[in-house]
Image (tube, rainbow, N blue to C red; front, side, top):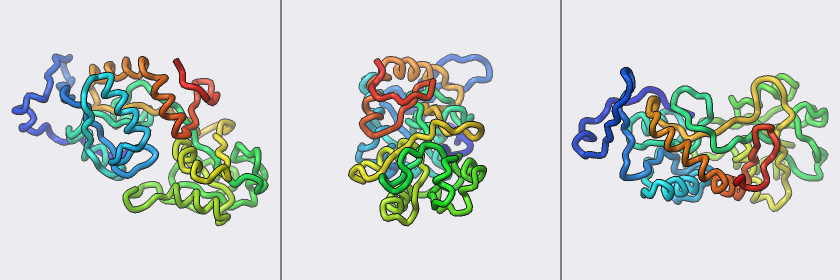
Length: 281
């Protein structure tokens, strides 16, 4: 969810034959999607989402998409920090970001392919068993980790938890730092009593704790900001044909996407905010 303005179309692309021109209405730009490969914009070290070894769930989902399109996968790697979208998608070096929050107008969102939520993580048998809301009175005396600038920080401030909170950085180069892993280690060691993380991150990194940690999706929080978000593929604005093609593919392969996400411990929600435990067919 980073990046700024698009770059100009390189003239070299016109000579390659890889640019497909599609007639569009007045005011729309040409379709710049490469039809010879599925070109993915991705972070090379951002597990559980992606890495340059192809181990993330976005890597796995990209392979499903590519197989459906009968195309090879090609990656443009760039740290998902300031400038990510500008240096990748808007520079026309790639054609799709595999995970982008619905509603951000920087890119054109496809239909969402999963919905997840922030989650509370804590040690089992340490006085917080059963806690599944930030308004739980048992949290008042606790030190809770939170990634600075994320939606849960606002709720923690509202319910009186922020004064004792331990902040972790939001925008980092994951090749060198991993705030989520540090938070999980701090929970395990007892340096903090609990932590709040985006569900896919919480579900993935707690798996290494050998059952010692609980991941409690925050499904009971009301008001703003919300805890649950729909995640889409992100494409360039006005590339509506490409968006529609991906939407059709999402509908067709939703069950396969679910299976990948569940295997990574992602808390998946349906539209009624019930947890999904089996792939949808």
